[in-house]
Length: 385
Image (cartoon, rainbow, N blue to C red; front, top):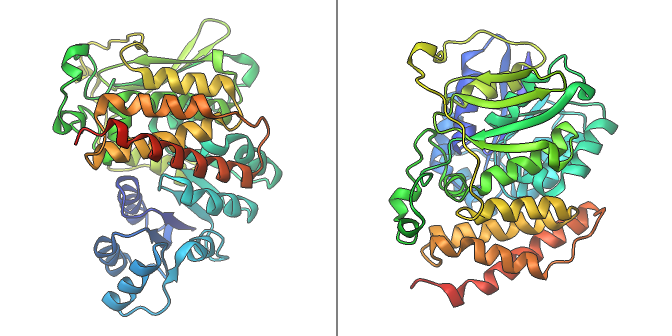
């Protein structure tokens, strides 16, 4: 029986994780859940699943949750999130929340020897070298939940790194793939948030529309699988049937195919190193249709190029990229920035950043804070309002 804590249980990945846990009551136990602020949804999850541990890391919302539910044992604030991630009654921590709030809990969970199922690509983008070094030092496991990296992880089972020629990360292209550049100048919020294949939160959907998510995934793959930038490639695959391809040195290619259902990679991460049966949908190859692959156009999607440039610069450049992107995307979602200005904000922040080659955790957090402020400072001059 694995005792599971879910950081970010009210998000799309968190909700899917609770479905997976509920589907395997003989193998998985929900030990704890955590959310930032969506306390109504969290209260419903707690009432249904009855986890013994609950954390709310926005302290005023934690007090509201306690009043709403009558629970007086709520773990509150950043310390509460740390307490849940390192609790002795937790075996496996699912990190399903994006942003830097989860970085310290992730680090402490690894240091406490917890197994990690990581759904937040941003944390490896910010601190991949540090995280993977800690995983090795503390003898634990980190299994990616992101569909592309989960696919690569599975393809690499039993394959030595010396046999790997290249990794191919696929992407549907998002909601704007194929749209002429002129049309993207006037793209609506509804178009940006209408992903053709996946149902995700607004932030990651915007990242999909800019192709920033593919750039972040390249950075993530470098750290997860120990390959240099030039051996990780992105291809646009609109059908979203093939989630990743591993090319081997003898000319063989291994691909992972599956429906667009996050419960599949989540279940694999929770069951690892085993593989369990499930009632989730199967892929019907006879209905998959022709499978197409295209080179991404970084001129039309400059955020992808910005991410690749940050990866090449190394060090804290990726943390600066992530922080600036977070702020720019949120400004767009809040109506304070035009969609086409997102890459401009990020580029200006990166132009001002001097990367640190081997940063400590404190230095990474400092660069994250600096990049967010720098991005905020650049938004008013381009506000569409």
